[in-house]
Length: 359
Ligand code: F6R
Image 1 (cartoon, rainbow, N blue to C red):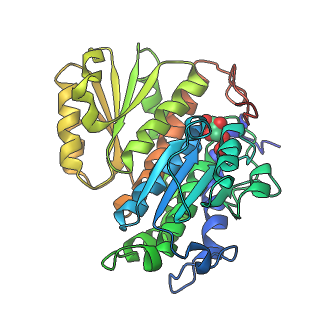
Image 2: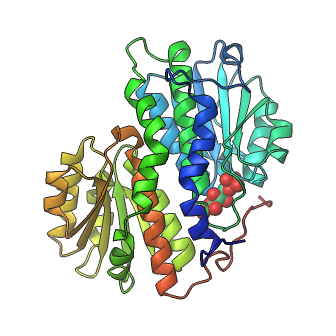
C-alpha cells in the first residue's frame, strides 16, 4: 500500500503533484478562468467579510488563504476553531464563515459551524472527505480532491487546501474584491504548481539539511507574508513527527522577544518568498550575528537571501503568493528526514490522532 515508500507520509508528500492537479484542473480553464461547480456567485451576494475557522495545519492553510483575500481587497480574518466555538467573532448576514478541515470531523471546527448556524451568517466548508460531518452542517461544501491521507501529519492536504483557496480567492475577486486587483500572475502560477512541486521533490537538499538540524536544543522557523503561515506549518510538522522543539514566528516578531532564545546552538529556518525579502534578510542577520545557523529556503534566484544564509535551498520561482507552497514541501521533507534519522514513529506520532473528534 505504501508503494515502495517507507512511510505513508513520504508517499503522500510525493503524491502532491497529482493531488494538486486534481484540485486545480477541474477548476481552471485553458483561458485561466476559475470555475467552482459546487458554487454560484449568488451564494456570495452581499458578503462583505470572510471569517475562517480551522485547527492545526488547516489553520495554517486558512492563514495563507486569508492573505490572498486581503491582498485582493476582500476583508478576511482567521480564527482557531477551539476558540471560536466558545468565543465566536461578531458575525451577521453579511459574513461568510469558511471552515477548513481535511477530515471534516474535527470537533472544534464542527462546533464552530454549529455556532454560525445560530446566526444569519453563511457557511462554507472546504474539506477532503466526501460525506464528512462538516458537509452536513455547512451551507455549501467545496472539496480539495487530494485523495486519502493516511499519515497523521497532514502534508498533501495542506498544499491542496492552499491551491483551492487560491482558486477561491481568484473566483471571488471580481465580485468581492477591489477594482484594481489582478489575478493573472496568481492564476498562471497555479497552473504551474504541480510541475513546480515535482521539481522540488526531485531535489535531495532536504536530506542534507536535516542532518544539521538533529542535534540542537531548538529550531526556529520564520517568514513573512505567505512565508509566515509556512513557517508555522514547518514548525508544527517538525515537532509532531520528531518530538523535538521547534517554534514558528512571523519574521518581524523575533526582535520583540523570541530573539532572547537564540544561541550559537540554535538553527533558524528562514522562508523567503520573493516579496519583501530584504526585510527577511535583515531578520536573518539578527539571528546570524547571535551565532545561530541560518538555513534559507526560497526562490532559486535570490542573491540577498543566499548571502545571509549558511545553507540555502532554492525552489522554482513562481509568483511570491504561491512560492510558499513550494518552500512548505521542502519543510515537509526536512521534518521527515529528521524524524527518520531519530527513528520516530512517523506515520503515527505519539499522543496524536488523525482526526480530533473531541473538543
Ligand atoms: C497536523 C495535523 C493536525 C490537523 C488538525 C485539523 O499535521 O494533522 O494539526 O491539521 O487536527 O484537522 P482537520 O484538517 O481534519 O480539521
